[in-house]
Structure formats: C-alpha cells, structure tokens
Image (cartoon, rainbow, N blue to C red; front, side, top):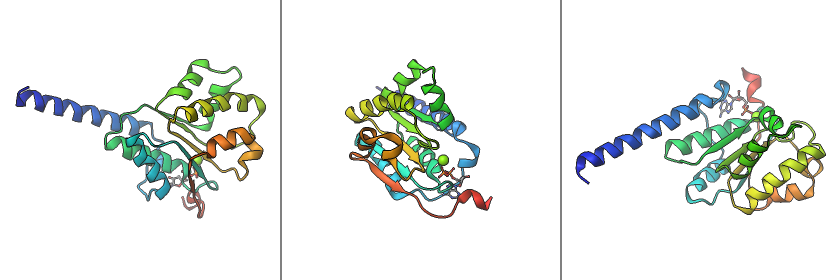
Amino acid sequence: MNSDDENNIAEWRAERLRQRVADFQARRPILLRDAGQLNDEVAEWGSRLFDNTARMLVITGDTGTAKTWNVWEVLERAIKVGYAGEIMFLTSAEWQDIIGPPRDLERLRKMRTVNVLVVDDLGSFRINDWQRDLLGPVIDERWNNGLPTAITSNMDDFDAALGERLTSRLGDGAIVAMLEGADLRAGR
Ligand SMILES: Nc1ncnc2c1ncn2[C@@H]1O[C@H](COP(=O)(O)OP(=O)(O)O)[C@@H](O)[C@H]1O
Ligand SMILES: [Mg+2]
C-alpha cells in the first residue's frame, strides 16, 4: 500500500466519523444539547464501551436532574472518539410503542441484540404485567450476553414496579448513578 492509499483510507475514515457524529447530533433533542459536566459513573460506563466491559447502567434521580442528558452526552462523546457500535436510544414513548399491544416483534428483537440499548424513563408510570413480560426477556438476554444497556428512571422502588427478577437482573454488576440536585428545567 502506498502513501496515497493510506491517505485515502485515513480521509475516508475521518469522513465516516464526521458523518456518524453529525447523524447522532441530529437525533439528540435540542433541549438536551447544552454543554455540561458528565456524571463520573456515567463517564466510567462510557469508557467501558471501548473494551466491551460496559454492562448495565442505571441512572436514577428526580425529574430534571439531567438523567437523559447524561446518556446523550456520554454516547456522543464515545462516538466522537470512535465508538462504532449501533445505538438504539428509546424514549419512553418509543419503547411503549414497541411493547404495544400490539408488540413490534422486529424492534423487540433489535432491543435484545443491538450493541447499545437505552431505555429512557423506565417507570415514568407503573409497569403492567404485559410490559414486564416483554421487557423482562430483553433485559435477560442482554444481561446474559453482557451487552451494554442504559436505563434511566425516577423510581424509588424498582422492586415494586418491575418485580424482583427484573430488578435483580438490572442491578447485577450495574453501574449506578444517582443524580441529585435541583430541577434543571425549573431555571429555564
Ligand atoms: N449538565 C447540564 N447543565 C445544564 N443544564 C442541563 C445539564 N444537563 C441537563 N440540563 C438541562 O436540564 C433539563 C433536564 O435534563 P434532563 O436530562 O431532561 O433531566 P431528567 O432526564 O433527569 O428529567 C434539560 O432541559 C437539560 O437541557
Ligand atoms: Mg429524562
């Protein structure tokens, strides 16, 4: 390979990275694009994406403590430094859509296998049996395969909302970030 080829490959890689960052930034909600300080635990999970040791990330905290912001931020930073895995970022409306009824089998399958799954705002309302029966196997399979999964929630009591089995899967080996502070939305 001569140096022209090498330059071409480097350029192509750089262009692909620029495109990936731009695509991700375009998906990021406008109100969650502010610069800010990433939580340490969240950052730790993000760095583990690179050696395949990132597993569950559970971010808890009251409304407006930047849970969702932290997930977008950590993933954007990871992409910028070359993380190439596929990311499925599901808002609460989106994962409720998938779970249905009727359930969306194709996207449920993707939830089980995609490189990184984000389930935002789990427990923004009470999880019913139907939802638990569909979310359970997703969490189970990702847990079995050691796939990175980020959950945000303002629940105090995961057990009551999700059941013991699912809660223990979520908690096992998880990095937990408990965000605190005033509602950041209130200042707008
Ligand atoms: N680090 C930060 N610095 C300043 N504002 C922030 C920061 N993180 C989030 N915000 C703003 O605070 C608001 C709430 O953040 P969000 O992530 O939606 O909270 P949560 O998911 O915990 O309810 C958003 O409008 C967001 O833009
Ligand atoms: Mg949120």
